[in-house]
Image 1 (cartoon, rainbow, N blue to C red):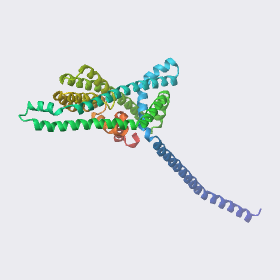
Image 2: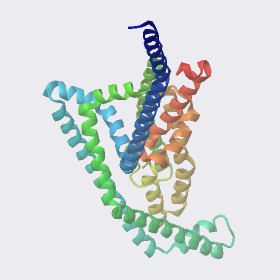
Image 3: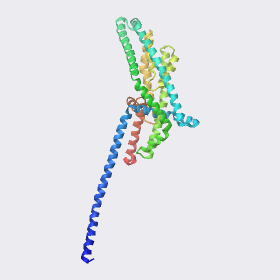
Image 4: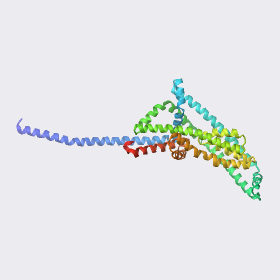
Length: 371
């Protein structure tokens, strides 16, 4: 090859190489854009799936949360059964059956108490001559009590009948919503079975998915355990105290069978969202309906002013001390969580607030890098 031709060939190769080198940044840029688009597409699709999944499980969130909390509470029993039966599935099934039997028994007892006493009370008030009874009581304090007695009688009678009517309507609404309640209970027990059987693996997966440092994850789990145990312990202690306080009222105001009513009030007070009002309210109204108006009204006032306030005062203190969190967080969390999550809001409400305060504390100390 001649020198000019060789030079032209070298120049051409050099130009081609230079052109290829110039095209490399463009190729990298195109590839980077493709990766960015793919990343955003995956994130977008993932977010859509999360939203749709949330809409699917939204009606059952409270039931699933209840199942998770019950599974944590019953896990020591499940562990004891599974070690002896050598089967996690069989152990979980036995526990679910036992819980269902206990729940059915409780519902049956409470329903019997409500329906029987409410109907008898309604019939007693319809037949009772309250004006004469109230007139006698007021005559002790007033010189001329006939007109006042009639006015008070009308007010009391209409109020009591209105309360009973509302109670009957509430029971009717519960019966109408029984399909939804049954479905919620089915989801709860279905979730309880799987949370008991696969709870340890599920817990580990959730911990791994949390985008926080290991110490924060450990603190979250520690707070979950403390708050759950604190709420359960608080419910038992507050139930005992409320029942005893109600029992004192039964003895002081001469309620029928005060010892039996005290034990019933203690038992019902331990159950979430029910409380001793289910005992002292019907008893006080029955006492009024049977002619013991003075002590019946005093018991009603005592229940409203003393027994009902015990829960709001003592529960945050006991739960807060047991869970090692602020009483204010417990009170606001319970009151706010209850209408959103139902019964499980007593646990979930304070837990959400405490988790947020934990993250804010870490962020305050070291910024986002500390999370």
